[in-house]
Length: 373
Image (cartoon, rainbow, N blue to C red; front, top):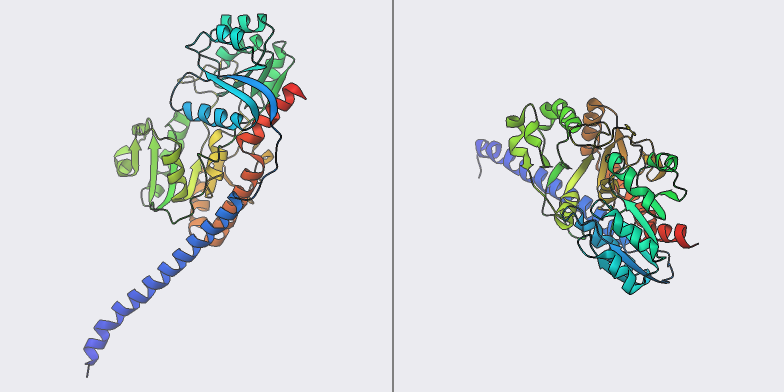
């Protein structure tokens, strides 16, 4: 017979095991529910878009990583949408290639590495040109000289449209970037990562100032920051174990981190940071960045700072969560870390809308429609 003393010693151990089993069951159920529903949403058949009988000569950014995944996404998507795609880059004799191949369209992304003389020569051959700008409004001092050289201009910043129109360009269109389903998608199995909060991106000064206010809170959390310049933090030593400094990641690793995080913070760069920008006109930014779509497409909850045009793409409080101060960010992180169902449902609604509206397939169809329809 066990003694009363042994019963007392054994009880707490059993209680801990019971609580562990319940926690493990709840975690497994929640993960399974999220992954299963995300998989169904991701694989739902999308609207069929007919293939256009045109040949596109695609001129890449020429900047390498981190722009190369964008080039890959656009080329791969175009190959499913048009009769022929010929990729090239700014280091090649693009005008001579165009003269020989006679494409229906020369599509340039970014355009900062392609000499303007090449564009002039292409247009002199009677070949239509278009540019999709990647970094508006941060380098307006440079792009203002590039934009007038093209037949059609597409910018991911709404506020840049009237500016380029003021330069005399008549065919300027607002077209945000999106996500490529082969790069960003929810995983179907339980993630090997276990992070409460993640942030991926460079430590621009506006972000550093914000995170300086968050450090006392984040230092106590299962959080990881990844990117350049995070040693600028005032309390860097306090956060150092939670920072992957100067780490560059491709889409696969980035997507894995999004999938393995309960919450991903998104914070836009400042339009008036003179240390990195060339925007002396001080055009403000209204439009969401590319990460807005990539995070939402990964089936995780996104907590982002507010851009005026965000609601065009995701409904705040329904498909995405926002914050306007460090205090509100902390409050919402706490809430969603302790309310699994609410966190999960917002993430799934964001994924559903991303698949329906924000793929590169949708974006490029819009681009081609503006040019040809």
